[in-house]
Structure formats: structure tokens, C-alpha cells
Amino acid sequence: MQDFAKIFATILTSSVWEESASTRIVWFTLLLLRDLDEVVLATPEALARVCNLPMVHVRQAITLLESPDPHSRSKEEEGRRILQVPGGWRIVNGAYYRNLLNVEDKREKARQRKARFDARHRNAVSNAGNASNAKRGEEKIVEERKGEEMSNAPTPSPDPAPLRSILDAMREASWGGTNEQQETEVRGVIAAGVRVEEAIAWVRDHPGRDVFALRKALVPRDDGSGPGQFDPAKWLEKRRAANGQK
Image 1 (cartoon, rainbow, N blue to C red):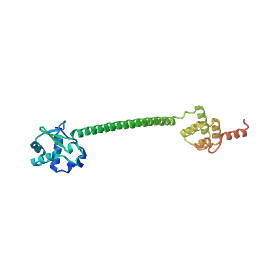
Image 2 (image 1 turned 180 degrees about the vertical axis):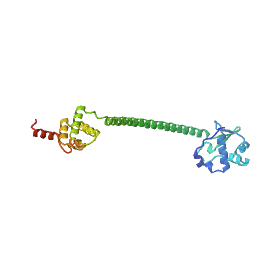
Image 3 (image 1 turned 90 degrees about the vertical axis):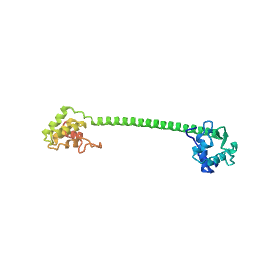
Image 4 (image 1 turned 60 degrees about the vertical axis):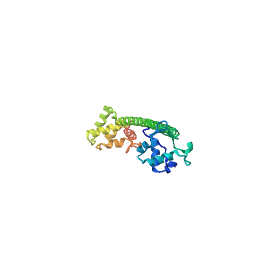
């Protein structure tokens, strides 16, 4: 006897499904009780106890299942579903349907193997893509950090001698602002490439100015269009010419 029986859904459209409920119960019970040789070893009385049916109903079902069925899809044994054997009955098409089930099992297992393979492949591709994206993200972060380090790098300190010379000129010319503000502005002017002698001459020629006027006058605008208020080189050239200097 088997622990369970696999049954095709086509049984619902077979001619046996048109029979009485007791016949269907007996038929399903025989399918469950059959061994690997498609044989059920039992007496009608034992079958009635297992089916929990009156004996008369069981004998009627056995007679019907042993009889030819012109409406059966199977023509083997004229459509009979069971044949008497010593000690019980043999399921006529049992081996045929068992082989079909084995084929279906193999197909289902093949589908499951393919599904597992496809899932592993998708995961591998996804992981590879994530790793690639992560690598690109890390590279981007590294580049951004390099940019931040470069932008945050301190501006090289100007030569202290020119710095001090311009600061002294500002103080002699009574320029406004704190010492810290004056030094910040002078560093910006020197970092922008303004010649020291031009800055000193302009400071001395414009006494009493606000500290922020220095960079505004000497350093080009952000758009690169030149000094905001004045061209120190041309001014210095005119000043020298006026003083008779070369």
C-alpha cells in the first residue's frame, strides 16, 4: 500500500466521475491501497470497512469497475478499470498513469532546477551590479574627498617681507580696519598676483581708505573682466611718468 496516490485532474472529466458517490469512493480507495505492482490485496468486506460504506454499495461499485466502459478514454481491457486477481484486484491502467506521473515529476523537478538556476543567476548579476555600483560610488567619494582637500587646503602664506611692507604702508596712510582685517586683505591681494610696489603705491596715494577698498580696487572681478574700479599697472605707469620716473 502507498502512503499517498497522485491523481491527474483529468479524472474530473472522466466517465467514472459520472457514477455514484459510493463508486467514486471505492475507486479512490483502490487507488490509495494499490502497491507498486498496481495490485490491491483485500476482500470486499475489508474494502467496505475501509470505505465506510455498506457492503451492497461496495459490491455494486466493484461490479461496475470490473465491467467494460464504452465511454472510457482508455480502450485497454475494453475500458475496465480493475480486474480480479488472486486475493484482490489489479488496476488496469495503473502502470500507464504511474509512468505519466514519473514524467511529470521529472518535468517539474527540471522546472524547479531551472528556476533555482535562474534565481542564482539573477542574484549573481544583481550582486555584480551592486558591487560595480558600490565601486563607482567609492571612487566618486574618493574624488570628492580629494576635491574637498584641495579646496580646503590653506593658501600658501605670502612672503612675509612684501606682506609687512604693504601693511606698514596701510598704517602709515591711516587705513581703516583691524590688524587682522588688513592682513587678510593684503594676503588676498598678493595671492591674486598684484605686484607689491603697485599695492604700496596705491595705498599711499589713497590715505584713510576703508580696509576692504584695497582688494576691491586691485583684484580682478570673479568674472575675470579686470579690476573692479581701477587698473593698477596703468595707474602706476602714469604716476611714474608724472614724477619723471622710468
